[in-house]
Length: 159
Image 1 (tube, rainbow, N blue to C red):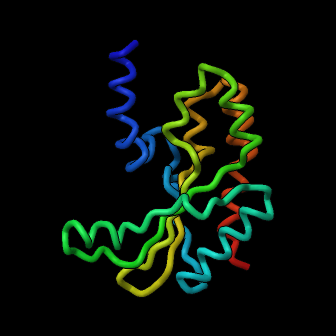
Image 2: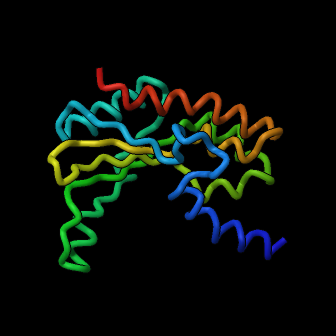
């Protein structure tokens, strides 16, 4: 079992970065959406949408990779903010089962907002519905991704 865990830990970042080969070309593990809003406005809109859907968005759950990496490497990767949020009731439904506690490594859900060199602002997040396809037949996982996947798409609705 330990060997399988090590293999999974090694392969997970590769699968997340490049998507699954079984996925259709139009589906990617990381969903990216162009925002018509400015950087700060995009962050505010995603958080507002999340709260309207019943998600918790703690102020402390955020990372500024531009600031942190520039401090260490002196390189500027551009404006960005990664922030996390949680739908607590959905998390409890899953995590009350010992067999699913390993999913804590992928929680809470994260969104990234960043500005590319073209000056445009983008938001990205994990396609949990695609990730959930790895766990077909596991009702709790299927229920979670079917409930939360559409929520995450609604969070990047900038209208």
